[in-house]
Length: 324
Image (cartoon, rainbow, N blue to C red; front, side, top):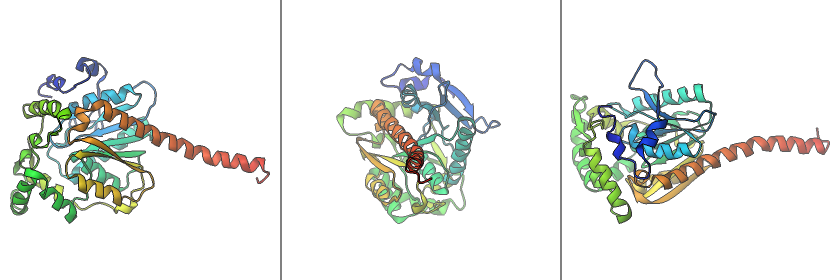
């Protein structure tokens, strides 16, 4: 971190010094300091939640949400900021993080992701990784389908800029793949502040702080930007059968597309949680977000326990009835 204390202005309901006391750091690729996990964990084995943030942000943006979840008894790990990586590279990076957690903390892994993190984690899911559940917000998408492209171009001022710039970017990426593109050209944070008064003041303060945060990503290479619209999915939507939660913000990014994608999911255990907010809802309402996340993790856990007990009860019943 260029400024180790700048993040302390982000928490809105928690004393940042209390958060700092429980933060630890681990590295899922030991020889690479860019693969740092911000960690809050208990001494006993618990459910583990891996958090992956959206474009630009770093792990400490989610420190308060992580802390509130940690206080409910779940171990929490936050991915490092995404940096200049393509979607395919980010999928591998997240896979490395999950393998690390499974090796050292067991199989009880859940992932909460949003924005760019959610796009990457969804492709990780389609690739076939096995965890307990996925939780998505402001995401996910199938990046090559026309419905997604159309929704991105219709998304307010940023959508109009995307519609104008995309043909140019398609040409430039062939000759200047490493050309740095400011994130604000296709995703301006001040444009997605929730207009509802109950969230507006808090989110405006957050976004103003983002603008001057020395540790935010301000731009990405053109090849990374184009990977948001040209990376084919690594598997079929129908093959995804892991419990999945969509946190659906009414005034979030391209909400109609995300809701339609949810309806296309075929797994039995899925849930759409509609919240009255926008893109930054989980940061302006961290306590409510914590309740939803913890409730989902506990429900998945309880269903897994029930699934494990049911065969035992069936066998016991058969023994009592002299069927075995």
